[in-house]
Image 1 (cartoon, helix red, strand yellow):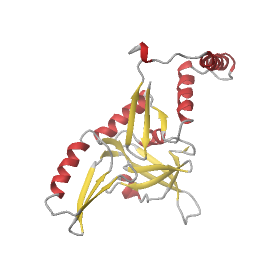
Image 2 (cartoon, rainbow, N blue to C red):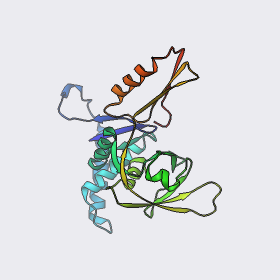
Image 3 (tube, helix red, strand yellow):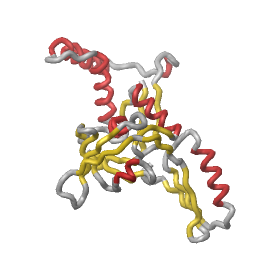
Image 4 (cartoon, one colour):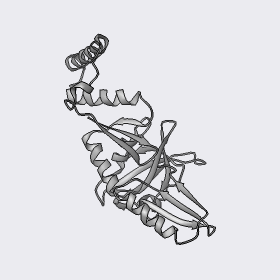
Length: 233
């Protein structure tokens, strides 16, 4: 079982639960714990035997895992094998998509910013735009990783986002073509000639070495302070 925890956008903690590693470290389950697990099993059997449509055990277990972690806090979610592959693409800093930074506010999918030079940027996506639908699928209550998966795909494939924008009375359908997006992990500059500014856009495999390189460059000037920007990450 793999779980992840998003800290805003990009930074996450992967937790692997491995059974049989250290039997002494595993807490002993109480009778109430066993009764609760038995209830879960009973529900799975009832659904499998009586639901109007056929539902696989794998599908139900996956839904149960999402529900369990969804009750913890807004940033915890179940990482399926497919989502895990998307996570690996993030850490490599390259993926097929439209180039857009997202967040969830009040259970709505909101654009933080389009990446400059990407299909989303050229299509006119703006910060604050609310994504109502992705290729016709409504996004209300859609979690972040599912939304990201829907927007990613092979280079050259078309994608339509339905956007709700402040000041517009009607939703906007914005069509774009996916490209290979390469994400710059770290940016830096000197402000007012004396303050170092370092922004970590997204955590990737090379973020540590990129931070070291940017800091080395910034320290060529005599600095009196440093700003580390982790907003929307």
